[in-house]
Image (cartoon, rainbow, N blue to C red; front, top):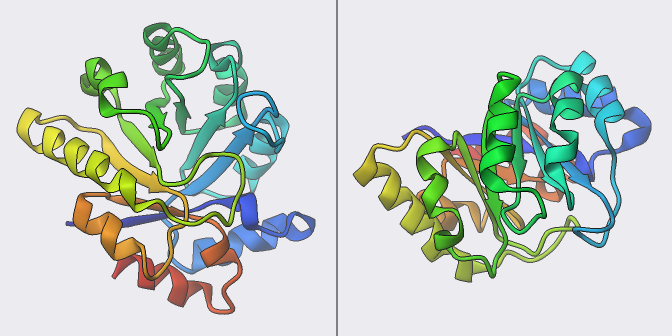
Length: 215
């Protein structure tokens, strides 16, 4: 089984963002994870489509864009036009799930759902056949540098099992507290994509950090 790494730029130095992105790209990153927060759905503010558009010009890596916003349906076109390749939102948001998934696919983008630590798999089970990406949060979303929550691993195992049994095609990703110690736990549970922020961007050797997560 192949494992992929998606560095989250939440922990990058935004005063030299182009260099930061180039460094993880050269170090072996497979995707680039963009955390979009609105200060309403989660208690933090980050950036919007303008920054995504700028990042799109800096890299050829696929951009998996995690919308931690209250009304994602309202902004799908903006993020699609900005260059997001994968658009992920939360079932807990106000937007109707089915309509939001359709809107993402209408613009030719890959559609994903993210589930918070308290959210059961049952909240997204009806949509598994339509998803190209599932992001299991292993911290409560909103801030980088939080401690990994191992209690979410049974959800990863369940989603991996359902993918095998039903032949679903989604990529199974995990985000939150992923480092050299927690990555093996996530991978054994069935995670295919490891999203990591501070572990990668605070490392003096980013290639080593990314290869540690993969291997």
